[in-house]
Amino acid sequence: MTGFDSHVTAVLGLIESVRRPGLPTLIAVAGPPGSGKSTLGERVVGDLNGRNQPSDRARLVPMDGFHLENSVLDARGLRAVKGAPETFDVEEFLALVRALRQGEADVWYPLFDRAHDRTIPRAGCVPKGTPIIIVEGNYLLLRSGGWAELKPLFDATVMIAPSMQTLENRLIDRWLQHGLPLDGALRRVRGNDVLNAAKVMGDSFEADLELREFGGP
Image (cartoon, rainbow, N blue to C red; front, side, top):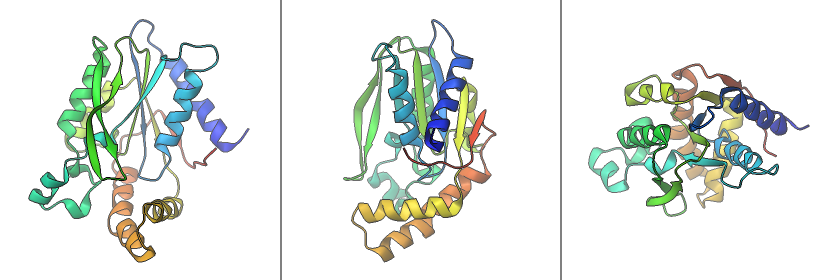
């Protein structure tokens, strides 16, 4: 079994231990940028929807769709730190998680188009009655501001915490893949992304499950 497989197994075990039959079970997968949250979440949801289970047993909901629009960031002088906690609409995100918690109706949510650097309204949907919902994002366990209201809404929480060097290498590769030159990628990572990673690692509530190192499949 690979390290990635062991992480998936650990998360699946955590989910089974907190399942709420007849009610939606919400699991937070938090971690700094570049930690592998979406990779882990996608694999866990894939496993939950396999194994002869209904194909809609689980859904993955990313936090990234709640980026404030660039026009709003420009007006607030925050464009240069896009991705920091204050550049997300935390109130709308809280409303989404509360709606998922209730599970009384279909819940629509925005997605983030990284290639075009914009949000897409109502691009995702969690159908009413979905039994397991994995929410992934950087600041799900943050102890400051409105973010601090999130943790009690989840049945269990996971934190992915690779080394800062691992994160920096992955983030540089990410920006290179998005077309930035090396010097631009380094400025973006060291001037913003690494600061946000340190915020996540240093100012988050303790998770029910912490994965200290994370490797891809």
